[in-house]
Amino acid sequence: MYLDGSLAIGDFEPDRSDIDFVAVTEGELPDELFVALTEMHGRIANGGSRWAKELEGSYIPRHALRRHDPRPAAHPYIDRGGGLAIVHQEGGYWVIHRHMLREHGVALAGPAPRLLIDPVQPGELRQAVLGVLHEWWRPMLVDSAKLQNTFYRCYAILTMSRMLYTIHHGTVAAKRVAAGWAQEALERRWTPLIRDARAWSREAPPDLSETLDFIRYTCERGDRLQANET
Image (tube, rainbow, N blue to C red; front, side, top):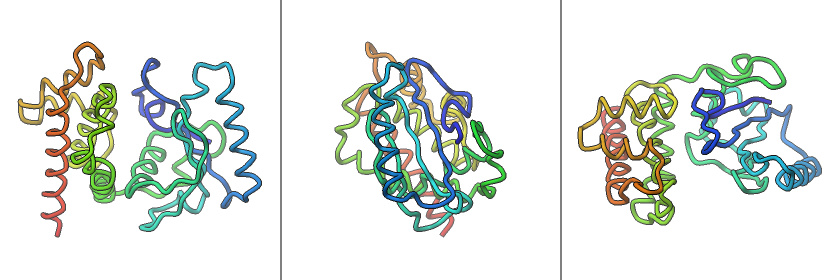
């Protein structure tokens, strides 16, 4: 069992972050064990801890974690505030998380994650970012319902900064590192938007139209990368 995400990369903020974890299993979970885990997560969610509904994580077999599969299987996954379900993640999800786990994961139980995961190459990370942009973020340019939530706008802008960082550097950085880089490296137009996102303020949230433009800009940068590689 390993800590992933902001706790692992040093970007954890107690008032905003969730608890990301990955549990590695010897093989695919039998139905009865999945049911037991579902019940366990239900008991945790109803517990008294302030973090009880802040868990986000996956149960993945050792063989599936080892290296990239272009057609990854669905695995048990719990989303923040939700219940355990069998989920097929968007393209690139596990490439990014394998890199995060291998390079930054914190072992709670088990061997060092580097012993379980093959190295993830910069080109693989860039392609993974393109997959997530295409499957998750580009549709928001048509249906922006999620972005009506001002905190989600902040998350979106900081995520775009991280994706642009990965496209440029071929590695993954913490939100604060990527946002700082983006403020210095990108066009001045985006500086106020990224500054507003870093503040996470309900009183002065990032502008919705500018947020959509930044998502569009990131998708276009990804498209240019893909065109240059082909």
